[in-house]
Image: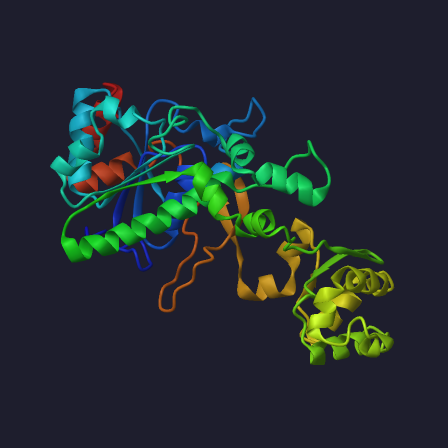
Length: 393
């Protein structure tokens, strides 16, 4: 592994990643690597990653929340890969790094002269990870893609509409995140393999296939003709979600009693687990009537006390204020010079002995030019400023 400066804390400390990604798929991947301790160097040019201002007012003069989150814990530099001197600097960076990550359209890196074959010549131990909408080959390889189109082409959107009963509505998706998680996992596996073989490798993640990988329950419904999920039930002041099919007889008895309906225990339709599964529709109709008699807090107390797999449906504002989330320290207050104080989710992959946290939100374009080029190539401030003025950086 490449030795780092010691600023990064986590199991990937010592791994240097060159981040050529943009928008959300690739940056989500490299965010995870940075959270786990890798020294992630985001490389931009010109106006930088267009995602910096996505979903913001047209006159916004600062980066948006999503960009600040997915670029947290990274260092940002600028580099013009189309300039010969910029290319030389990039090759020197590749030689000093462990991983290169990109999610350009298929063929862009090859046209720049930095496909995997060239990178491997520069550094035989380099791990090259790429992700695109439909993968590196196949009839759709060169079709532009965004999360919304990938969700449409993976069956996710249609499945969401069938579950909600509202065709044409906006589905809550994870087209970018699913591919980002998959690519991060692939990179970690490639680094483990490199420790055995001494050689780097390349990997390719299709956003479409990654999205489908997170749809096991939907494919179960397709192939088995049996629904998997249960629909949340309405109560006095909102909704609760719970899982009844596999509730054992002891818990079923306790649940009926705690809900004030002991008659459910001896009902021949619901006596055993097998009975309750056979008569599942009737079971849910009965339980939904019971639920409508109680508030979310009353039901939550019952679920917790009787160890029933159920919970209230919380809004995002309620999640942030939830007692468990607060005591876990799941959210952090992070100060940013332009956006002010941000509430950000703490890295959720936690390792004993490592303080995985948010050290800073996404930095500005080229914020770490002097730091990175000075640290790696002993460049002076004047050197960096000159190369910037000449369009190299």
